[in-house]
Each structure stands twice: as structure tokens, then as C-alpha cells.
Length: 542
Image 1: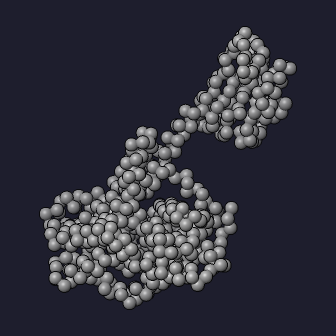
Image 2: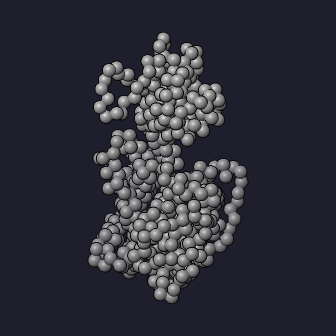
């Protein structure tokens, strides 16, 4: 198990001026890519534009400095947009700050307890389902600005926003739609022509110039928000027991989502650079980064796959690139932030449409529906629907519960308890058959024996000839207390009928459970045999 040591310290041991040059260029390019995304995601989250930059600056710096990955770039991501917007609407900015700090604390605890590998226990169907659901909520939330609609009220939930889009569709602003389509065209076509040019930045500059120079009747960021170029200021939110109790479920959701998304980004990055990250150190860094972001006016932060990939493609190979990215965004905040007021809202919506499309994983979604068992498809669709209709908290809780129940049902179906067939006067050509005396019966248990499979252990049927009963357990990897109680009941029935129970090949975990329960002493150590041949020989002696 790797020690909790930041990757930055390891990378600096053999750092060179040549690598610094590559990290510097990569960090500058990633900052240019992150600038419009950070602003757009802040607006989608229901906070001011500069708070998106605060998140990328503070959270991005801390996570790069303390993280367990060489190339991870952190910042605000689309996955948090609907969660953050809901928290802000219900509990204000202090509620968001408290939830983010609590999430940071949870992440640090997860890292210290070496729970980085535990993330693999969240099924792929659930991550695919809620990621696609988040993408749909982002798209629905941006239709208003893309079409220039005027809503009758300020909706919070996704379904309320969709209802307002339908009821207020007649207020469409065709000029806003044209600006949005122009931004969308740049975002789609420019990467095909000039793949190294950041399309989102070009879209922002072109549409802002178009709206400003032509005096088009289109809302800009400056029309809806007050732009600030001030540095992130340290602020401790007002904390109360009631507020903590209110936002604690959201904090767990933020922590789980941050852990999943950041570690997935680390895995993708490892494959691209043939490296290996320290998952537990990354969780600690994510926790400290989220707490720091909240204390300096930011929103939840996590590793961003797209920005991490851009860092790698431009030569970044150490956390220095992430630190350069954060410092560059700080300079942009101070020097250029007032110009963000000119960015048209339809352009922001178009950028978020592309973000949602890229994160949706619709190909994986359809592939699961086509090729996976119906139970997996059900978990996928249910998680997706609950994310869109309700929220991510409900989706994850229900999805994990259903996935766990389906898994237990599958494992219970795999478990079997069967008695051997006894054949007389049959020629044993391959030498695999065992000679079983007339007074012996053999039961074989196969598969994990837990509460879902405990009813597979049968009741003893009366047999006047039987004097010894062998329970063969070589294919039982695990045993829980519920199944043990059923097994004890079976043994008690044998004792009642004066039948000696003999256990054959009990594996380590089941043996530990049997010994702790006292059943080992009750049966007697001499009646636990290492294999079936020894068990049959022991039964014959009896």
C-alpha cells in the first residue's frame, strides 16, 4: 500500500529545466481551455462567474500540489452543476460552503483510511446512469439562455425548468438563437479544422464581439451578473447544527461524486502516460482542495478528464503543470475578468451543451441497454431517470440499493446444496468416483453461503441406515452468521438422529466463522477433515 506522499514531491526529485518548459506550456494552454469552462459551469451552478475561477485557482492549485497523480487537472465540472444549484437555491452560499467543507472532510477521512480502492464497488451501470442524467439536466437547464426565453418564474428542479421551457416557448428570441447556433458551429467545426486551437475561447471571443459591435438584443453575463476581478477572499461560513443536518446528505453526494470522478480521471491519465496514481493521496488532496475552495468562495472541485487529457497531450508530465494552470487563471482573473461581462449567455449555453454531450457517454449507455442483462439495464435506466426527475442523492441511493439486491439475488442463485448420487456396481473408468459406504451420506455445498442463500440448506430427511454425514465445503468461499445458523440447525437434526457430522475441506473464512461461533468445539476438531478422501476414511472408521 502506497504511503500518503504528494506526487509533487516525488516528481521534483529528478525534475529538469526541459520538463519545466513542457509543463509551463501545458499549464498555459489548459488555463486558456479552463477559462470559459469555469465561467460557464459557475453560471450553470447558480453562482457568479468569478466563483468558477476561484474554484479552478484555489482547488486546482491545492489538488495539484497535494495530489497522487502526476497530471491531474482539477476544477469545477459539469457533474456538480445541478447539485450546487439545488444547494444554493435551498440553503444559500453558506449552505453550499458548509456542504463542500463537510465533503472535503469526508474525502480526507476516506483517503486516510485507505478507501481509494473502495470506489470500484460502485457499479458501472450507476456511474453511467447518473452521468447521462446529469448531462440531460445541464441541457434542460441551458435551453432558456440558448433560446433567449423569458420565464414566468425561477424554477429550481429540472422538471420545473422543462415545464417553463414548454410554457414560455413563445417568448423565444431569434437573435439569441442565432448567436447560440453560431457558437455551436464554432465549437463543432473548429476542432475538425484546427484541433489545437481552444474552440470554446474562440466561440466566446467571436460571439462577444458580434453582440457588442452589432448591438444585438441578447443577454450577456454583464446584464445578469455583477462581475468582480477581486482576489479570492478567505471566508468562514456561518455554521449551525441545523444547517449541517440539512446539507449532510448533499455533502456525502459531493464527496462520492468527487471521489468517483477524480479517480476515474486518474485511471484515464494513467493509461495515457503509462503511470500509476496514488488513489488514497488523491482522495486526501481532493478533500483539502474542496475545503479550501469553499473557504475562498469557490464551489466543489474535482479532477476533470477533458482538462487532464489536454494537459497530457500538450506535454504536461508533473503536478507543476496544474500549478501553472492555477496561477495563469489567477492572472486572468485580476487583469481580464471585466471583459467576461461581454460574453453572451447563448454562447455559455452552447459551451455547456457541448460539455453535456461529451460527458453523457451515450454510446456506453446504449451499449449497456443492447448487450447487458435486463437487471443491469434496469439499474441504468432507473438511475438515469431518478437523476433527471428528482436529484442525484435519490438516484445514487436507490441505484446502489437495487444493484446490491440484484447482486445478492444472483449470488443466492449460484449457491447450491446437493446430496451426492450413490451408484452401485458402476465401473469407474477414469478413477474419479469415490467409494461411499452404505452408512455414509455426502452433502456438497457450492457458492457463497449468506443470508440470501441460507434457505438452500435443507432439513435432514430420516434415514435408518445413515450413521455419518459428510458436509463438503471446498467450493464455499464465504459464510455469514445467517447461513451458519441454518448449518447449525442441520447439524442439530443430525445429532438428534444419532448421525455423526463430518466437515470436509472448510476454507479459511468459513472456518473462522465456524470457530468463533463455537460450532467447531461442538462438532469436535477430529471431525473436520482436509479433503473428501480423508473425510470418507474417517467416516468408514466410525
